[in-house]
Length: 214
Image 1 (cartoon, one colour):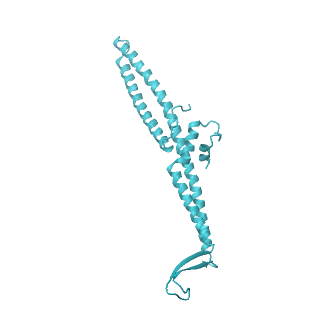
Image 2: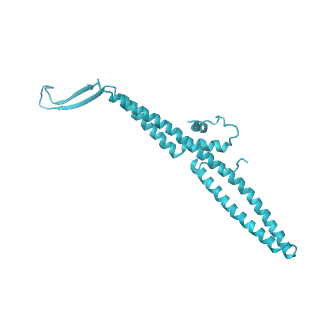
Image 3: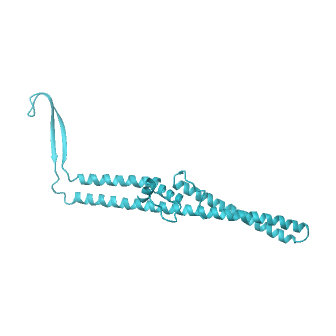
């Protein structure tokens, strides 16, 4: 409920330190996700069951139509007669009360379940968001490191040609650069996965995830 309120009311304050895109992503996931839709549908069904159980206490009205032909004790002419019956439960040995209690308990369980789903989606969204933020920052750091190592390879390569440095220095620099390239590829994979998870949670809404907090 709080997530939906945050999204529907733009004046709802966002807690200090929470990035705007994250707050909006949590609000969308907590109101538009298919699991929320299913939870709301289940809650509506439980409320309908409770209303039906309470109506069991009210009198029931039955109306029957009878075709009259040739005249009888109901009427002397052909036509249609209506038979109306009103039934009022007097004593059901607690059956109706138990049905109402069960319906109320089912509705309460459904309500709490919906809250649990919202909390789970919020946590999943937060985790995906900060996984994306972390991997984005690590990607920037590793890209800078890779650039420096490639410059270092060029410098050592010139020194090796001039016979100032041994070949082992160049081999070490090449090995370390290859390791950084592998780490960078893995980080980019994590970043891509985190972004996909986040976009699935918000239903591919048009949110700006490019500007992330350090």
